Image (cartoon, rainbow, N blue to C red; front, side, top):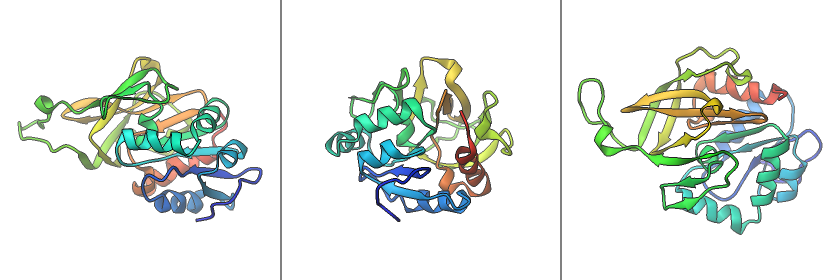
Length: 219
């Protein structure tokens, strides 16, 4: 995975030391049509990028701490203001104001919080207990049209691994929902930002379609 400074037109995957980013990088390279895809922890590379992907896995407190420690906060906030920006999993959650996981503040790009699946509601239609974390394939329903849904059917299945979900205050930003014990917001979008709880890089053809749509997206 290249980790150099970002040339003009590059797609940069932000590396803040949390999780294996190879699958994200490989999926983007697969659909990038020759565009350069870099993985970088350099704030200057994030600032220079044409498009930014903000993935992540692990615990929210650890992720926020590493963002600060690596001096990436300002670059991430700036990218979220002015260029096509894709948040994945924890990269979606960190965009919000606060998380119940560790009782920590997020980046505050989007209004709302991050909640844990409520234990009392974790039952399926038959009354059987559902495990947390929510792990495996599940449907994503389109709450409204968006360019990144192009070629993806309403109710297409994506791969999830998470115990927490975003709870936006602005319901107009909700573009995807999923059921797991309760209905929850699984995708949000505003202006140049699209963020999704599942892992498109692990979601077969529909995941690759979403990533290709992101690369072509002109918000």
